Image 1 (cartoon, protein in one colour):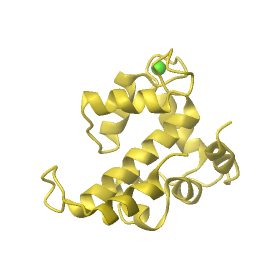
Image 2: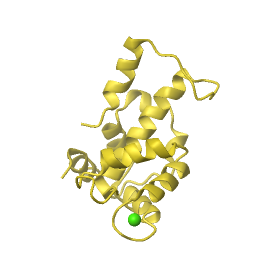
Image 3: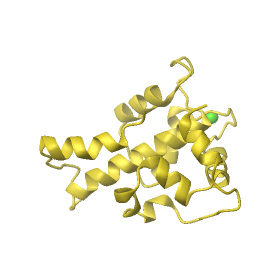
Image 4: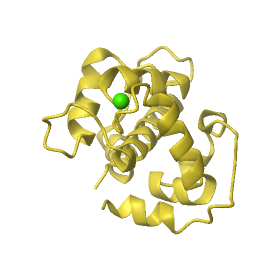
Length: 146
Ligand SMILES: [Ca+2]
């Protein structure tokens, strides 16, 4: 089991927060992905979201399902990035080209964190931003999935 899963299961199952995560852009600045999950999202919310996006009920999120999931969370990624995400978070060794529940949460939070950090530097939403080496490292390192 991934460490993030332990973290999630430690939260109260009664806790609910129906507000979509992209409406809380300020929260990711002070919380890493895992902390964000434990504080603001219950396991039930994630499970419901996973089941909603797992259209074929395969128990895994394939690239098409992931694209729709990320889109509905407010993140439009290119096919190349989508492929990279699936191969990075598919912990089955890459045979299935699909992401299991725990890794889907981690994937979503990583995309959210990275996108919001980028948007801090891309205030006009041009899709382009300038980082110094120092700023880049400080931005990306806390969000790397371990
Ligand atoms: Ca599926």
